Image 1 (cartoon, rainbow, N blue to C red):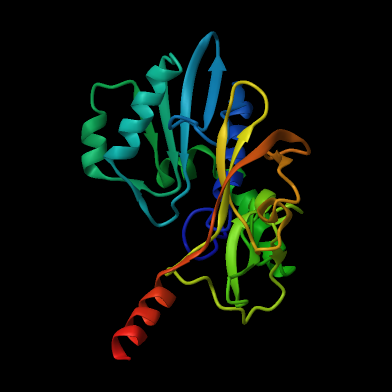
Image 2: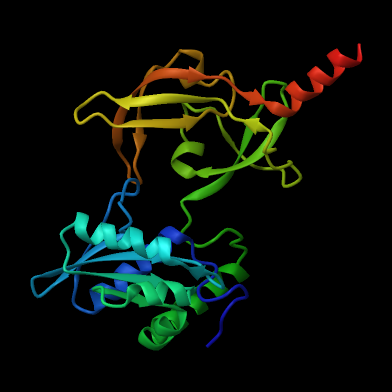
Amino acid sequence: MVEPRGGLLSRLAPEAFEAWVGERFREMGYDVRLTPFQGDHGADLLVERDGETAVVQCKHRPGGSVGEPVLRDLFGAMHHFAAARAILVTTGRVTQAARGWLRGKPIEAWDAGDLAQRWADAISQTTEQMAAEAGNGVEDRIGSRNGWYVYTDDFGRRWALKLANMIGEHPCLGFERLADPDTPRLLGAITVRHVSLKTVTQPVRRRTVPVGCRTADAYSGRMTQFALPQGGPSGDVFVVTAYAGEVQSYERGRQQDNTVAS
């Protein structure tokens, strides 16, 4: 089996891995539902077969590990969704402590070795497809909902920032696609400006989203209400409830140093 560096299915984005696992369960005769992208309570998929429901948590960690806290969250999700059992599916390994915690609980943990045995043909096919796409110049992880964008700080400097595409591509939020690969990545000392939002319809949902430049419609006040897609062509309509400016701890510290020196 051809396998790219970095571990099992390493070029597959986490969201794409969830969809990939869902397809494998469909092939096993399950009805599959994806839980909401946010607030999923530790469950990525709800699968049902022969009247029994199970929750599935997907952890795409090629070369990494999954510990006990993840399984505790999954156990809670199983009760939240009133499911009969739970399944962890990971491209990493499950720690010895986590496996010990599983004993006596209706939870199965399928690690990279288990997946290689269960779904060898599907892994081989997906790996070959990803290798072909990588050879055609696909540089980011296949199926990713994220991309690189430009954030312009209050001093006019441009920084590279990775965002969800639905944020980076939104016309009201003021980001632009990264075109210059030499653009430096955003410093950890900079807390980006953002706006707080809430839905105009019930039930009320709240979100905080970054803003790419000070002149963005959502930040300048020109646009106080707009739709925000949730992974599809349409989305909920949000209204801006608060604005928060940029904070640059590096600049603040340097200014304080200059004041002391003078």
